[in-house]
Image (cartoon, rainbow, N blue to C red; front, side):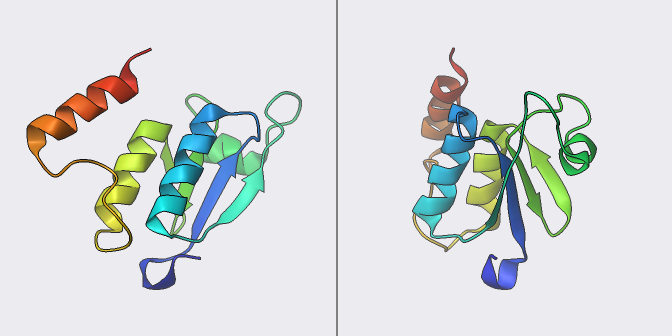
Length: 107
């Protein structure tokens, strides 16, 4: 759980680097959450399919019953919602933040 900011649930898969990115962000901020391991290869859960109907993929962070998808979006969401909890995940300076987002998206 995430204290006064509501309940968090992370839908993930152990082999996903994108799920690892979200786990690291939550860990750096010191935020607790419930983790749900998804079988993404043979039987995706109804919760996953309802939470991410477009891509049907992990990670999905569910905060107070509302799903947030895509690891980059989730990390930014965590940083914005949990201000004052743990260190900031992204730079405060707009230019530096833009550069960080560029490199995260670079593939």
